[in-house]
Length: 396
Image (cartoon, rainbow, N blue to C red):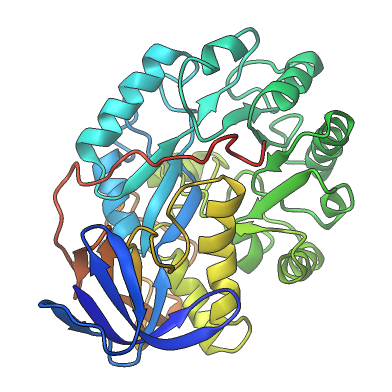
């Protein structure tokens, strides 16, 4: 397959070139390349498939909210070709047997490539070493059971730690700041890398150091106050400005969806975690590119390159020879409104509903195969594969 007349986007530059795909890999980048099957990108932006390191696919007992099939449809339509699933399912992924069940479910259902996290509770750290998670997820707020400081310290010292940094479920600013401070201190003490999920506060940023990375969600960047009930809660405009400044400067490394679908009635009753963002995350940020608030290169850095590098995911996140041919052709001119009835996700609600967005996914290529075009999904369930990790993965 040859994709010609591309504006290829990296975090550093935009290159006018063609892309030659052989099998599942990028085999050439340049001009004068030949192939029997040709797709004309017509000088549109072509970016790597997004790597979303924070999604909740809900499968098992909560599949009525989402499952690997419906969630991966939303991912594919949203330009996400690789995702990492969180372990707080029901039952939770806190032992090797459940991890294998999770792997089997994703392998049978997912349309796009995936990784799995393992949930840390008291006494199960050795169990995590029987499997190969992208990271070990620690919920300091007790979502998987009480986490004492010795468990947190041991996990940061011995495994690839990704941390939900809140000391309790109150949503109070001090619950996050105290947790972030503790994680950063332990990472520095052991000289081990730790990743902090969905950071939300300007004061939390003060504690980051050379051993920590972190992510921010679309809703914590784009919304404030009481617009949506979510955990961690939306913060103040001052916090939002600080998050944007930190993202622009590189202190925040990743934009991740925290795609956490629930039934609408459940969200009305309680400030449950996350927003169903997979369908629209990319389009929200393309709108900002069109408004010249961010650059397309920055978007690729935050959603493609940095997630793959930080989590040491092989062959993803960049358009380079030898990498997986995961590509998204964009239509920067398409204008629409957020319509939850069009979501591929089972969760038909969004605080962004009705918002005008400019920019859309035109086509998605997954490992060299045209997977999404003109709103149609062209691959079958089970097309997704478990991702490969570089040795000593997760910046260990």
